[in-house]
Image (cartoon, rainbow, N blue to C red):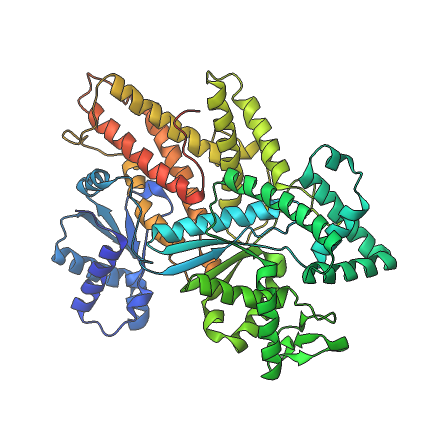
Length: 575
């Protein structure tokens, strides 16, 4: 039988009840795994501190009382109990062996979010602009969250909300019109051309009043599609952008269920705001603009329809929420963006709450930090953009050099280089808490020696080579003969199911969702397997424990593959 945290919690609660020491808030009694794996015990509880604090009695005395009561319950899976303030639980070897026997390709899947309908909105680049490293960060986090939710039983739909109207688009179209002879355009390097066009349009909008007026007029023409010549330029640029984005989504391993464009929700958003104006949610501002007075609710004022009569991002986001719900009647909607728009989302969600409180309650903003290279911050307005494409290509070059001497087919090398580069980038993003800023470390990101995506992939590939050798030598996995003593590897594998639960358990509090604990766990697990590999000859026909060692290696592979999938990292058979 396998004993988990929830089982230990039930045992502890029962023991406390049996002692009749009074009424206690059992939610304060928690079960934890020790951070230091060398301690030997599997679980510990703070129950003695909770009870002693309420009764104002000695903690050690209460710990002994609870320990003695637990021992009376007699659970055969518990090998030993210690009362040292905390109460520590040691599990029997059979628990760990039984866990290994139960591991399969679905290990880690749970039902904590069974039948929950979730929509995750992430990546969200603007057309006619380059795909920058901030979009990579949103993509890595959004994809990982989607997979974590799916693993816990939720029905997940992925949304990419792409901006195709608005002032930024007008700046880019204006730039295209002024830069028709650009070399990047002649060479067919359309994404670079669009990035330069946007940067030029942004700079002229800021420093030249005549250009600014032209761009404002152009913005309205694009929105209303009232000028055929402008439409032709805009449509061509949009086509280039979407083709460019789709290539990157494929490379990143993301398949969106819905692509929603700003232009598709703009009219709905405008109608929602105009209706809200009649109901007193919005007010008239300067020059006929419609605003939301956020100060009334502790925020700040924002414009929802500008003086030109055009809906702003805020209005479109109101339309987006209703559009998404119409496509998929979700229980929760997660929007993954950088933290520079935190204050924006507070106001927008406050306005949504006054108009459609049901959808506002279901909408959660997942705010992540900034991804920077050592060179510093990027700015698409000045043209100093660090594109996602640049980062991927640079990491691929480093990986290619790292595996240059390996004996692999050229086709294999190409695939490995791409998978390892993407794994390196995603791991670098996901190993941090979601809200943390990251300075990308190129050398560390591609290291095969630990704390990196390639290290996880390399460890998995090494284990796969062991399994291939077992097949060649006809040593089959088996649990018929097991060692007297088990190692830390078996004990770490035991944690996987709970790690996945913990990563997604704060499902309704997005800032507490923790993909990074999966990354950290997999790194420690890979390290433990590599230690085991170094100390043990796994495939050996003369060793009666060899079939067990192969079974253990196979279990490690399945856990690693599932864990890497949750991070969006491909498991590689060879490296």
